[in-house]
Length: 199
Image (tube, rainbow, N blue to C red; front, side, top):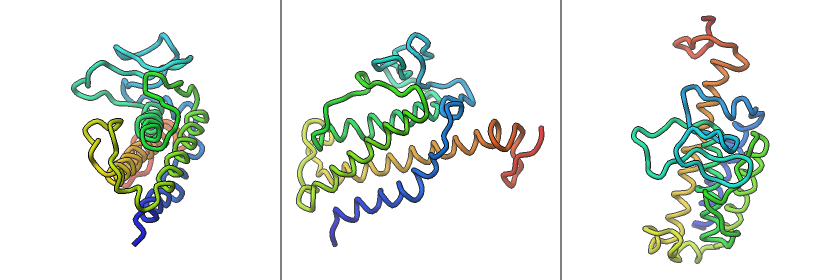
């Protein structure tokens, strides 16, 4: 079995058939929608968190430590997490992408820009995985992965793909929630069979 092909096919099949189509038509209103008070991507100087991060006109809500309970996050925040921590930083550590971090990222101020960033980093990651071939899957992750330094790269790839699937499902769920409460189905409660009903 060609394991590199299997790893690439697993995530790209999900990306092209499930995840990326679910992101089409994302509006700014959906992207920044807060069903409850949330962490998000906000114009500089308007953060809702104690230690916002990023460069440029928009910053991402953050804190020095992990708050308990964890804050709810918007689609914008989750897309940024997928783009930066899940993809870009890992591509930098493993595949020679320019170094980056959550602190030095220029966060997107619109849904279109967020999806452009996500698409770019996904393609960079996928090309990096393909470029490993079969033998590259067994090399050590190295010091950029901290506790994973001695693990084979294949294990990191599986983790990253789980992260994309997991966070992508969260975004899809938020889009459904928005559609049934704020968007194209109108405001109102959701019936037990999933149809919007007038409030």
